[in-house]
Image (tube, rainbow, N blue to C red; front, side):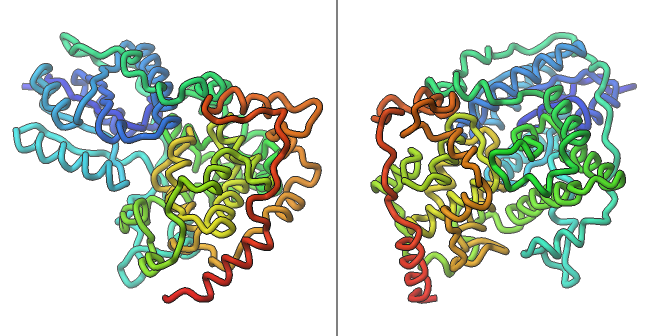
Amino acid sequence: MADNSPIILWFSRDLRLSDHPALDRAAATGRPVIPVFVHDEVVEGHGAAPKWRLGLGVRSFAERLEGIGSRLILRRGEAVKVLQQLVDESGATTVWWTRAYDPDSIRRDEGVKSALTGQGTEAGSVPGHILFEPWTVETQQGGFYKVYTPYKRAVWDREVSPTLSAPSELRPPDSWPDSDDLEDWQMGAAMDRGAKIVAGFVNVGEEAAQQRLAAFARDGIADYDDLRDLPAKDGTSNLSENLTYGEISARACYHAGMRAIDDGKAGATAWVEELIWREFAYHLVYHTPRLVSGNWREDWDKFPWNEDERVAEVKAWKQGRTGIRFVDAAMREMYVTGRMHNRSRMVVASYLTKHLMCHWKIGMKWFEDCLVDWDPASNAMGWQWSAGSGPDATPYFRVFNPVTQLDKFDKNRAYADRWIAEGKSDPHPDALKYFEAIPRRWPMSPDDDYPEPVVSHKEGRERALETYQNRDF
């Protein structure tokens, strides 16, 4: 007799119908499928902007499911308890989900699998969030890769299977479990008035992500290598937020990039290399989970960074009031749009960890609160790369000069002018939006004088290098 018991399909970040291996597998069984999103302990720990943006993605995905005659069941609570309850309520005998690789998600998922299988429910994860499972990429000695370039060489010619089509329908259960109301969760509460501003810059949902990829592959990828370091230009794919929530798959992006390489589009190779950098971050966070919580190079535990985020220099950095225009423009861009240009991320991270001598964890935590494209692996990897404490990191003695960086990558000051209002008779509208988005407790106005540098490049660089040279490791 055919098994007609429901399958619970647990969604966390891969909020799409197309190229979704777990969804494709469930649909192919012909059994009833109950899609579920759980506001669980991992979601509870998200910062303000990621949690708000995740809520937008959940709403959009629920609409996509309704379009194929299904629905998304919403529940809140500890994942294992919620899923056990849903199994009992629905009579489901199977629970599947997309595999995760960061330590918090792994801990949660292992607990879910153990509890469900222990009670006789089939439970397990299916790959789909990244291109290459971390344990399948090994050095010739059998270990994991710690340097990006050899990792890239190892995976470059690997076969990546074609993308999967979206199912046209999902068989519904005889009766649907009760569902929470998404609005009751108030996932944007911590955003306060900033949500209204950032909402004008996000690109939510699977259809929007597919359109953005298609436009970039058609019109932008050829110039990617020339324009990607110019923050005033629209020279990148802007797909980071969609990849974060799985509104588009890494595989779909990879194949678009490889087709562009085959078509002779000059910038495509550099773009695919950035996708592989994302893979490398997950490779490392899986094999060395301390990457997200402590110095990857453990001898850096002795480095005398400031770890008090209450100091005036950190406050100025967070508020975009350091007096260094590249840094301040970048921090304000993040507060208004929820994203920050990659070149800008390197500059602000270098300034915090080197000029201001502050621990990278302070910056990582702030980004975790402010970025709509926050990704646990990429965020940790980026901060430790900039600070010098991470794998394959930039040397600590390489101190970005934020003044000459602006001269090089924003010669006409279009980026700085877009985001800094002080001292301008007619500020850019986006620069003014910053003052509409910031907390009311920040006493800032576009009519303020622009500040003098809290630490000049020369002073900060000399202090950082002296401290590095006198380190005891």
